[in-house]
Image (spheres, rainbow over the protein chains, first blue to last red):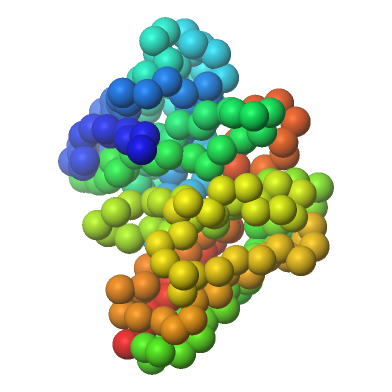
Length: 114
Length: 114
């Protein structure tokens, strides 16, 4: 089946630093999504990418859909304490006129040191 | 607007018992997905429905697992009989089918089988 390799697994950074994480796959996806999950909650959508090469921002977050459609990155600028959480990339394939389920990376655990 | 609603939030039961997890998707969404999250395997798709019809159940681990969607606003995931290795957080998500639309997740049911 499809697999996503997400890195790094965890990041320990100082408040105010920039963060970068990425996902790669051996398979092509039609859509890349980035989610954030906090303890006791479900994943919350941060950014959705629909076209190869697309670069999209959401506040301090920026994500890009790789031109090969096999990778994506997420950057967070000037990190703040509330950015703490687990960030997941997810790939989506459309087939037969409908959507398939998401394939998730294993997540990047972001820890911010004061 | 109400998001995806799951119940119960927590369930603790003894092995061998039947477990039923419930989900109410976002109104108007015609895709519904069930995922399972564990430390070892991350987030995995179990099954998904389109217009109340199961489309792909290849992620359902065993015959002990079953899912139904009797109407557009309700779905259940049942485990019978339950085993300790079924302990995980189970998420329900929903989305529109028209054009690529991201999935929105509930807050999950944390299941512990003793």
